[in-house]
Length: 79
Image 1 (cartoon, rainbow, N blue to C red):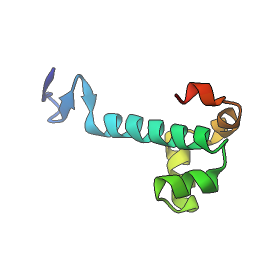
Image 2 (image 1 turned 135 degrees about the vertical axis):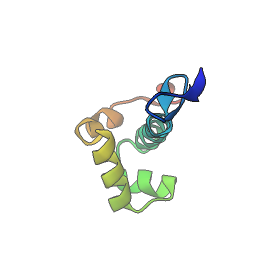
Image 3 (image 1 turned 90 degrees about the vertical axis):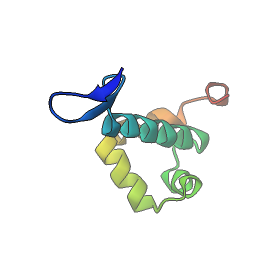
Image 4 (image 1 turned 180 degrees about the horizontal axis):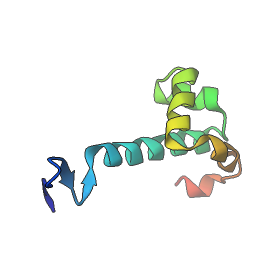
């Protein structure tokens, strides 16, 4: 359900725009890292970002501690 909550925030399905954008950004970064076997420089290039920007986004989204997980994904999971 869409609407404005009592707090004055607009939500979609109960989630705020920030929550939805963070989830989408996280998904894009995870996909780029999986496609580049965890290589952050290549993932940044794929996403059109500077490596430092990607690093900051990963830090904000809690993805830094998980970066080794991406190098272990096989390509079948990307399809």
